[in-house]
Image (cartoon, rainbow, N blue to C red; front, side, top):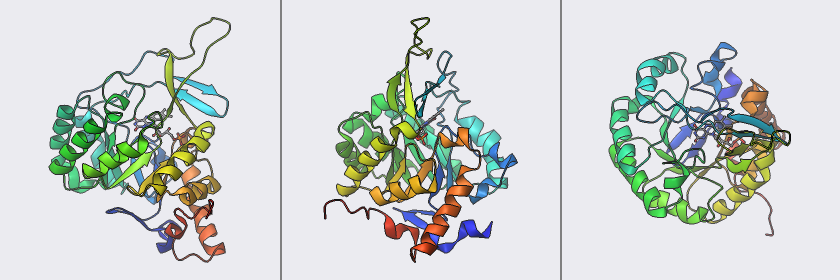
Length: 311
Ligand SMILES: Cc1cc2nc3c(=O)[nH]c(=O)nc-3n(C[C@H](O)[C@H](O)[C@H](O)COP(=O)(O)O)c2cc1C
């Protein structure tokens, strides 16, 4: 247990402090409560909750999950019980278990994000940060639809930032080709950092029925298949020196986590791996500690952005 709070793992991402740089990705770990039945989820640097909307959402029609080569396609469509459920039903247990929560929220317009933020004011002191899901490819409104318009990104970020006193993280999509412009507008809106990547738009077809394998036809691809894409996006954004980065996309091992940090990530997110290896976080944090010791580092952040690419 103590190892996981080894001071050499502590990182600052903008004004966010984490005891270690391993974060659970939104939508892949609940709010950390169920996994806590298997191990103490308080060891994790932070748990980003499933994205919560103002009102409960039913999500997309099934099937919603489908395995592909080295990847997972999902079209959950942000099924969730609504923000009040998190506040009333989940937060008391999150507190009790000493989980470090980052609350992910999704609005369909800047007005909805404003309303969500006003509901969060009363609990903000319990949160490490709030993450704006401006990148989900599985919903018709909000998500990537808002997140691909630079003006909307700045407006939404600034509304939430001005309402709350906690750091704001903007989650970015790999499906936009104006990633750096979008990140700059998140910064102008007051974001502390950005997280990337959300899933890549994908599709799979059943050759016996001729039907798409997902009820929603298209979905979001995650897992090892997207790791090289994620690394390239993070590397290009790091070089542009816009904001600190939380990197995710196919991390399955501590070696993957190191690669993401070398590319420019200050912290790393674990997503799909949680469906394959329930205690991946433990193995990855232990791997990072060994790496620090073997390489005589003062702190894991010493390697952020240190890839030797053409210098
Ligand atoms: C089943 C599933 C549900 C997800 N739900 C959300 C969500 O609610 N909000 C969000 O911002 N990202 C969501 N994501 C995206 C992940 O947080 C993460 O950005 C993405 O899966 C890439 O990381 P990975 O390859 O390690 O899974 C979801 C991903 C999966 C696989």
